[in-house]
Image (cartoon, rainbow, N blue to C red; front, side):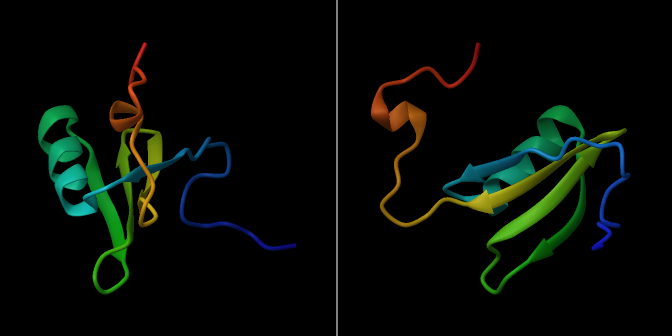
Length: 77
């Protein structure tokens, strides 16, 4: 059995895509107070951030993909 030790075992770990991962990390840390756990890739293609017991994986959106805003959809509820 493979054990994931990057987050506590009782955590839900959402994966969220951003077109500019560096800008997303800056926004999440400044606006909400998230802390960066690690980055990976060269150039950066992903990161893990956390706030208390809340953890998120951030990924760079695939080339050619569109954001909900670009598609005309709401981005939050």
